[in-house]
Length: 136
Length: 130
Image (cartoon, one colour):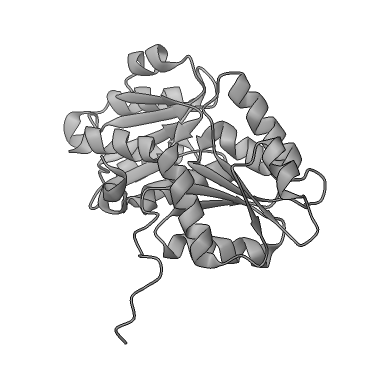
């Protein structure tokens, strides 16, 4: 009672986030968190599906797992950057990695604007998404 | 339309969404619903024309796959209707780049080239239904 919410429910209103995650539980969890903060959230279960989605509807921010079967998060950021160099609009991409997966330096060199380590603090995630969406 | 207005930008707007690709249709539906529109989805022009005989939407969002596809025929059939039967309902087309002139010539009121932005779609519908 009387406790101020850590993240206001309208923090991410009007921001479209594409969540790329092969684990259905994690995918649903990230979606729930971002929707709680007011975002419009689309989901993809893999990098290739995410890229196809970006070719039709550009999100404001991409949040992607790094370790995924077949194409991983590095492949996805490489494809997004290639399209950006060819004239497409830049989409800020945030990496979410498990312990021991993809060092922050490698993620940043690949073009990710931020690297979050699992387990992710939900409110830190929302603030990072908001920060990069507004900067765009 | 500001970002902050997105959650209610299309409140009270009834949109008939026509798209034969289920995944893409779901994505467009989610965007329109996020902006608080009431959305009815169909896969084909025939289904759309059938629904138009029952109710009058505020706008149509029609996905174009290639020039001259079934979406063209749908818009042409719609524009051939009398105004009281829906002949003047605004239509927003969504599809490949380079078709805007043709889309307008067929009777679409706005055409968004892919990749679109979510709020750009809501904005286009809102401008035509205000």
